[in-house]
Amino acid sequence: MTIRTSGIDHVHFNVHRLKRFREIMEQLFGAEMTPVGLLEQFGFYNSCVYFREGDTKVFMDVFQAANESSYVAKHVAERGQGVSFVAFRVDDLEQAAEHAKRCGLREISRDGYRGMKQVQFDTFEDLGFNLEFVEYAPHFHDELERIKAQCREGETVDGLRYVDL
Image (cartoon, rainbow, N blue to C red):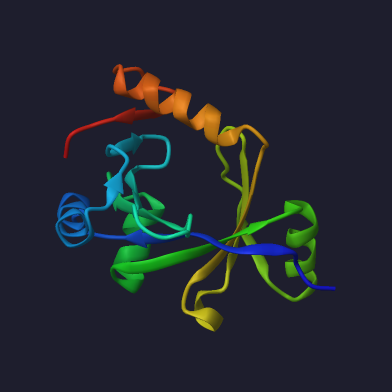
């Protein structure tokens, strides 16, 4: 058995200066980006980077530590800036996670978001990045657009609020 996937969904990048990362992506590629969000419960800033051209829906999920005790701060201190996770979209998250465990991978997290389930595995020593599987509920992207609209109005939704860096 193998895992059914539609391929890479997104790639996590941990950086020292999210604002500068965004500037470069915009200057080079005219990339579209979500506003910078702060997720206080996880201790990081985040922005997603999308590219206008092409068929791909793959995006960059970029993180900067908001405090020194966050996973992002610890990862950057131990491994430097760069790719931390590569996320694959899967048809059945639980089946994929069980298969990965049978293959000897160690699960490290299941921090998902409303309508998006995910599971992460410690594969850095073997693959050079940690592995993530994601599965989206049928109307996840519609719900996400509603959340973004609320955040643009200054609201905090599930611990997420937009900020200026």
